[in-house]
Image: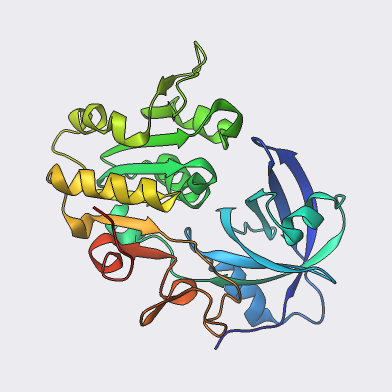
Length: 282
């Protein structure tokens, strides 16, 4: 049973990360009104899950964890300024108290990812749901091969730069700039994630065992179809579909996909399952 009572959280810190995007750090508050069960649920959050951030007198919106709650209750999210809730959030100062509900949804299948050849592809702020996966694999060194492809429409829209710079010290990271305006010394190439896939696949010893995708739907579908045509199993490809989520607890119907709800049956889906619900196009 989902709890609809927000947990009190404090806005600890924030920093800008790309155009109209900002990283926020929150801390769970240990108040008398919050049960031990609620606190335990937050500490059991899994990478790929999301939470609902509640701004009093404004509304609430879903966001993916870029860092799961740690032993101090601190967690992070990347937020784009695109609506009333996010605009209000960008006006807040550190120290203010907000509400949060969650964690919600299905996370990435880490049991199928660890100790495997893994390809991660993210576009724009869509890389956010994948940050925890990459960090966990690198920190625990439990992968056979790990490569990251990141795509942005232009350099101004690049996000998660500190994370990508950290990753590329230990694993191959391919930064793709769609408009071709690349910067020397920034490990960038012109084009889309699909354009670099022949090079990336050629660097895997036997092809990737698992592929994780997040970002614009058109990009993910194009990458998935290319990979399948290149011999990657449909059952090895997972996507994060964060579309039209409103309540987070499968009651409002905004994220309904035939007989599925993105907020509870997702947001992570396997490609062979997902394509039954969303037309993949030509």
